[in-house]
Image 1 (tube, rainbow, N blue to C red):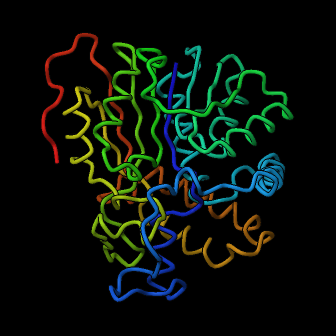
Image 2 (tube, rainbow, N blue to C red; image 1 turned 135 degrees about the vertical axis):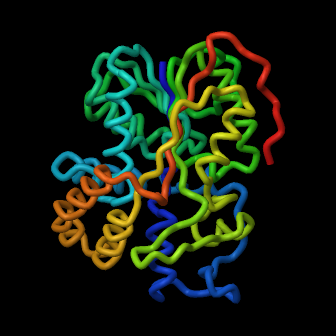
Length: 317
């Protein structure tokens, strides 16, 4: 089985960093931050409330996806790297897949279509997103895909999964160590974890490094409790839980920063967003070919040991 976590908000640190530096977001008294009200601890469960409007929006997005793929740059980049990891980790040999934090289900739908022999479950806190995703999966005839409302800590998930994916979710969780422990417990011995998070700093196309204190990260991306993770920091946290970290990889370097600049110029004009997709794909290919000194996002692949070696509960702050 497989789980992956992901963030469903159509914003990125990169996209908002570009807007902030170029005057497209209002500024707070801290010149690095746009103005927002207060941190909302219930943001993840409340971000989608109108089921009728959300269903209409998602039907449009699914129609566009059928012809153009994902048109939002953040997810388009993630999907490209994600599919490469799925092949590398031989997801085709698995039987059941779970996404925790499935949001509007875009990764679940992609998996269900690409791997029809997998049983895929999307686990999500927001009940509106769960109901709408269920409707769309039924309409698209995806009998191998279903969605449930709940959390990973449920006893029913203990040692059930061969693989867990976590895409842009840990930065939304205050006690990320607790969630890593839940993922560890949900894996069978020898199971794999694949994590994707934003880097602790964002590097612009001109080389400027943008860093935001964790307590102010929510002002750039709603729901964030930290800006991100440096690779070594993420590795240390995973090791403290008991994982054997096999690899960390930085991605989304200068080519993707350029892609964000291009995308943000046409974001509100749908025909132009579609028109630039070939250029976006070219920049993604350039990003894949590079081994960057700094990437604006971080992937980590780790495994749960076949035999636990007592490394759990080491303190990492």
